[in-house]
Image 1 (tube, one colour):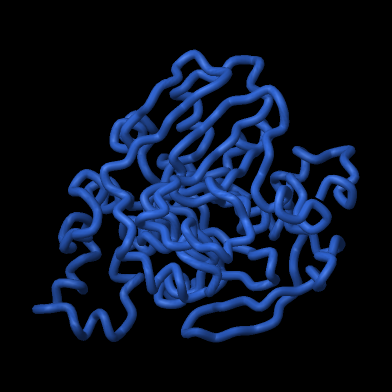
Image 2: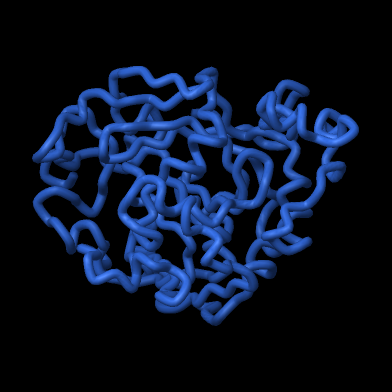
Length: 323
């Protein structure tokens, strides 16, 4: 997987926002404004996100990771989600997204680092490299997948701001806890505890493919997709890509993670996509790809979801044992 640098880009890597607008949106756009939107900054801002976030997302003009696979329609990617903070149904996140207000946003950074503290999201994003677009495959552990264009920053470049020490062997993440806004967190029927917890080895977190997204389809992240900032690990099952991150901790020991706590025999810490290791209740050999125009097809699942660059991270490990 080649991650392109700005100096390596060509015109084919520039992503006009008009490419994300379906035919209905183009027809509805007043005075042809949407068609003019191939130029960054022409589009009306997303009123649910602050000006600085709209500006940062709209300034993203290149693709650093591409694919020749058809992208999932935005309407499907924003309406068929797992985000249990809103409820367990696939449509619950979109249905109840307006109850959540992700701005302003702060992230607490703690543990084995030289620059801990509580940072507002704007300063974290401003202190990082330029935002870039990456089109990643997203493979859910439930054996369905999508292809989504994300906008964000390489995770390692963000973590470097906090100067992790040599004692930081793992990095742990937590989702926000706001039961007054996130109905799933106050449900008596939830079978996971909150906050939602995730973690990575430091070498995983520093791999160039690990990504923090603040936008998708040329716009700031919708609430149901993890606004205002979420993790993306395209070689792992989707539940590792924690949403609405509010806390980061650099730690010495492997941190607890939500789905391993809930069902240790079904969900491991690593959660690498592996067609040869089935879930105890279903096969992982293939997946339902939700593709362009709402088309769904059954396709073979690839090791590491096709991102072979990460294989060296797990050299010598028994991936059936460390699943």
